[in-house]
Length: 119
Image (cartoon, rainbow, N blue to C red; front, side, top):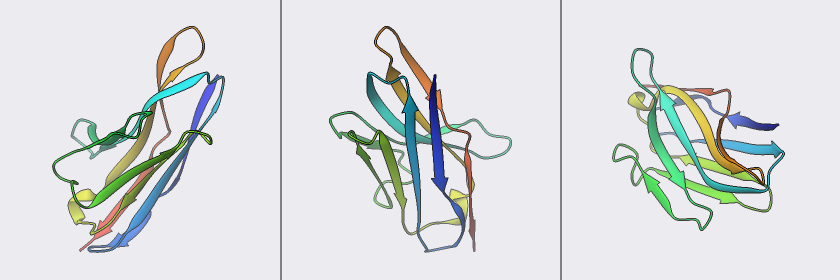
């Protein structure tokens, strides 16, 4: 079994910064892409940023230039550094990892962590 454990998040003022971290553990042979998504109540979950095993990153237009994503393949972790936060960044943020267990590739999700940005 695989688990994704998220940490970070919380409350920040507009213009401030927060850092999210996610660690994968369990039956892992290889992790392909890792990323962060977010969901606002009443809306669909949306991609925030994704990073490949080769550290190629893609960002949503809404966070480009403000957020950075990084990963440590040796530790099976992915981080999201969020700078210049805006109230519209308020959401529940979810970590996602595409994991190969030696036989199959599955998508795994973290439990979600709340980020609230006050104006």
